[in-house]
Amino acid sequence: MTPSTLDILPTPLEYSALSPEELVERIQRRKAELNAVILGHNYQRVEIQEVSDYLGDSLGLSQEAAETDADVIVFCGVHFMAETAKVLSPDKTVLMPDLRAGCPMADFVTGSALRRLKEQHPDAAVVAYVNSTAEVKALSDVCCTSSNAVQVVESIPRERPIIFVPDRNLAKYVQEQTGRDNIIAWDGYCYVHDDMVLEELDRARKAHPEAKVVVHPEARQDLLAQADFVTSTSGMVALAEEHDSLIIGTERGLVDRLNQRFPEKTFVPLSGAAICGNMKLNTLAKLAWCLDHRAYEVVLEEEVRAGAEKALRAMLDLSGGWRPATPEEEKLELAGVQPKGCGCA
Ligand code: 13P
Ligand code: SF4
Image 1 (cartoon, rainbow, N blue to C red):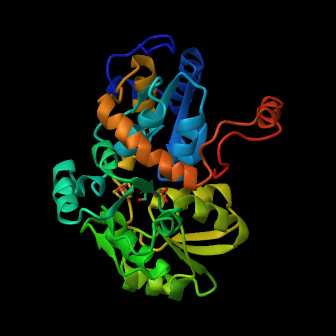
Image 2: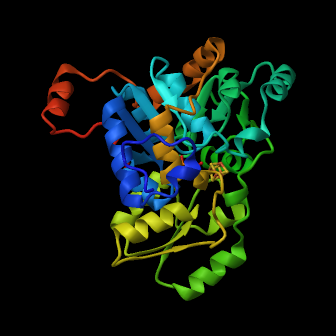
């Protein structure tokens, strides 16, 4: 028997037997019932991107998580992103379609290891890339994302040493951009970006000599040195609006989305192998299951949450992303004149 859209099915496996249309219908209906919002990262599968209310990079998603008036946030991304939503919206229910969607880069640094490094450098400020656990954020002075890392580091007095966790490639990029020689970088990396190599870039350039090259700052320094632009995933979306052809050095999900959105343009992946298996764990079937079952819920200890909030708010303050709307802005939003969020998507 074909299950009706009204049945709640026991596991994601049963949902995967439903057609995409039926899954989308269920997702929309349950979302309205729960007053839920779906936040999707730019690396999500295209079909998840299509049902997301807000799509963006880590900075845009955290700004949206801080500002939404929904009761339930469903996060289609990886674990640290959902944790960030919970940190910034503690009274809301935050759900993830698959709890196994973690970020291996975030797992490079644990709270106890960071505590030990802080003991060795008691004067240092700690900057945590948002790709880190809430526990690590709680031990940090300020967070950063790929789009504001340089600005965040520049806000710290030049003479003060900085412990930067966990991405060594982003740390190196920031070091070069700021000319600082007092950044103590953790030795973590993202396997998706760190695996991209110059030979792949050379091949892509030969095949598309007219294309500009844009690379994510999680890539290695030798690749960044060859790029025309270095920017976050939403920065890449903005570039795609301006350019007819781009070689894109980041995860494939973003390239797929751009090709769908601009079929007349040429966007090619710098590396065909750049796929984040963790991001791809989220599927329409799991998303429909997650909404029907209100699971998996992200929970944080209050002490950790409050500590992480301080570091995240310090970043949002610097990025102009956290302040209550003025009465004038609220009026414009209600009238539908001004989009909510930072408008990255
Ligand atoms: P962005 O902040 O650029 O979206 O990057 C997040 C991420 O996980 C990159 O691998
Ligand atoms: Fe983490 Fe890399 Fe996946 Fe981004 S692409 S979520 S940094 S593993």
